[in-house]
Amino acid sequence: TQLLEQSPQFLSIQEGENLTVYCNSSSVFSSLQWYRQEPGEGPVLLVTVVTGGEVKKLKRLTFQFGDARKDSSLHITAAQPGDTGLYLCGVLANAGGTSYGKLTFGQGTILTVHP
Amino acid sequence: ETGVTQSPTHLIKTRGQQVTLRCSSQSGHNTVSWYQQALGQGPQFIFQYYREEENGRGNFPPRFSGLQFPNYSSELNVNALELDDSALYLCASSHSTDINSPLHFGNGTRLTVT
Image 1 (tube, rainbow over the protein chains, first blue to last red):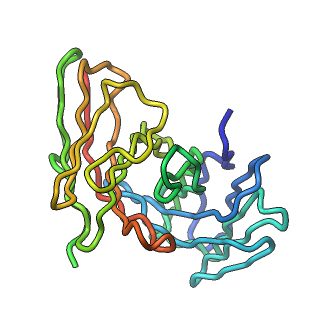
Image 2: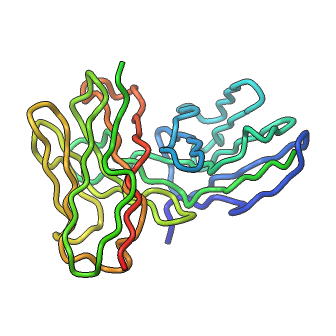
């Protein structure tokens, strides 16, 4: 069983459309992170959300943390081809020692934006 | 500021062989974590090194081992390679005393086991 379930797994849209990606769990988290990974590169952190109900905006990207801190969403407005990539949500999970740096990721959403 | 660099970028090995992957952490970072990412999946945590010692391990067998050197660079070693070890191996560095600083990932090493 995945700790984090992301949906949809694949998303193929036209430039200018809006979209939402979801990250769900039955567990409560103190914080949750969103990353974007482009082909041939490592993941890059987009945002960290820490407070239930929190909304953060990064240009055309809007991130929301659920009130119960079990789920999160990423909404992209007027998608552009440059938004194409793998979107990952991740949470810190205990694996012994300190918890810092031990991220557990969802399986990701592969987004393709066509010109 | 130098980012995280990994070498080699691509590698092809045969089942049963051994492989060593290398990572140079970002300047100022003394903690290195390794992740395995299968095609189309999210990365899975292998282990973390801090002060040259393993500081936590994910669900990977002992044939996955690592080292961290005094300059904070790190190696991932995999023995007795299996076909399922084919994946992108990502290294991420972080500053151990700053829990709010993000993980900085390298671009990975693509390992193919035939």
